[in-house]
Amino acid sequence: MINYYALIVAALSTLVVGFVWYNPKVFGGIWMRETGMTEEKARNSSMVKVFAMTLIYGFLIAFVLQFMVIHQTGAFAATVDIKDVDPSVLDNYMKAYGNTYRTFQHGMLHGFMAGLFFALPVVGTGALYEQRSWKYVLVAGGYWVVSCMIMGGIVCAWK
Image 1 (tube, one colour):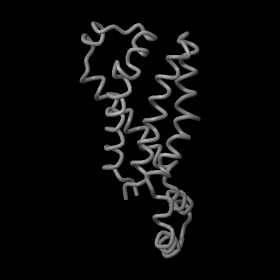
Image 2 (cartoon, rainbow, N blue to C red):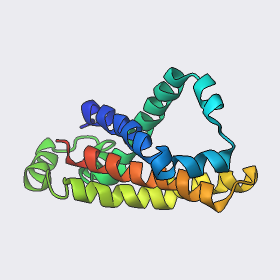
Image 3 (cartoon, rainbow, N blue to C red):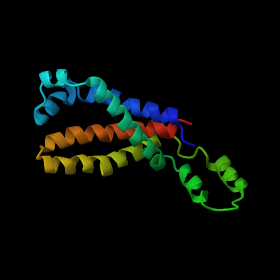
């Protein structure tokens, strides 16, 4: 049931979103001012490490998102611990409903909800303790809302 290709592509999408989102002509300038990041600091950082960790974190998020956006995983989960379950029950269910709600748009909807109701509050809570501005919360949290939307769409639609 787990489609690792979809998870890898979803993780890669966070880099694409980041390249656009954090471009100085989009939200990068605001983010740099709000975090105190300078061009010199950015040049001195290990971008290989940053990109690698972004991919790893994106993969972990995509892994969890699949359980939120693909409703059929609930059918599998409901039968995991049942001994002597008739396999035809699950087979028949999947034949009848296996692709129901398996669209990019549906995945984006659930990805949006995950981003808005989970990722944004996580970023916002951290920002409170770090005494960061609301601009920072909107830029950094907005990145994760958009990333979760795209990841949810990819994971849900990829069959």
